[in-house]
Image (cartoon, rainbow, N blue to C red; front, side, top):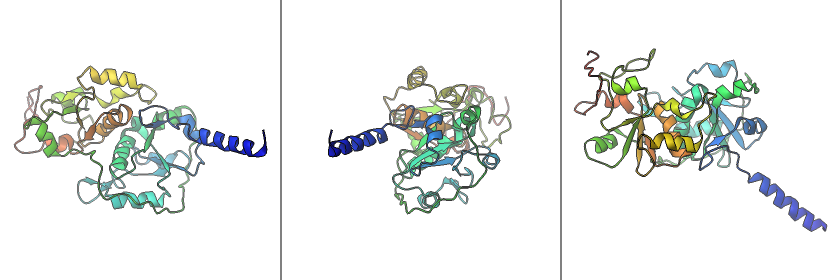
Length: 309
C-alpha cells in the first residue's frame, strides 16, 4: 500500500467514524446516551443545556460545560404568556457559542420533564435536531458521572434563527376545530387520571389555575410518566408504540397533546414526534386556557362543578 493509498484509507476511516450516530434511540436520532455524552464533554461541536424543574439544582452541580436555562425566564416571554421569541432564543444560543453545526443536547431533572419542553421550544425556532440525554439528570447522577459548579463561558457565535416558527404548536382554535368542528385529529391528555377525570384540579402541591376540572371532550388519557423507565430512560420505541396503540394512538392521523400549562405534554410530544415519528403539535395553552375559556364544552366524569360534587 503506497503513501497516497494509506492517506485515502485513513481519511475514509475518519469520515466513517465521524458518521457513526451519536444517539441511542429514535427514528431521527432523538437521544444520546450518558456514555456518549461523557466522552464528548470537551467536544467543541457539542453544547449541553440544563433545563430543570428545580431551577436551583444547576448551581449545586451540573454536567461540566452545561449552560443553564431557567424555564420560567429564559424560555418564555416574561411579559405575555408565550414562549421565548426567535430573537430571544437566538441571543441565548449566540452567547453559548452554538453554531449551525453544533449538536445541541438538553437534559434536566424529573425525567427530562422541562428538558423536553425546551426541546419543543428549540424545535419551533429552527433547532430541529436538538437531542435529549436519555435518563437525564437522574441517570447521570445515579451512574456517578462528573458534576461541576463552574459557570462556563464560550466565544459568542453568529447563529441566525428563522423568523417563521415551525408548525409544532396548537392553539385553542385548533382544539375547538377538533371538538366542535370534527377535525380528524387525536387529542392526548397526559395529566394524571384524577386530573383527567376532574376529581382534582391540579397535582398535589401545584397551584390550581383553572375554574373547571375535567378534560377536553374526546381526549384520551396517557399520563406522561408512563413513557419512561424507573431509571429515567425512555422506554423502547416498540414499547411506546404498543402503549399508545392500546389507547388508539398509532400515528395514522395528526395528534395534539396537552396538560395543565403545556410542559408535561411537551414530554409526550417528544415521545410521539421525535422517537416515534408521528405528526404531533403541543397545545401549551392546555387546561389552564381551555378550562377557563368561556363557551367551550368539557368532559367531567367525576361530576365536579366549581370544585364541588
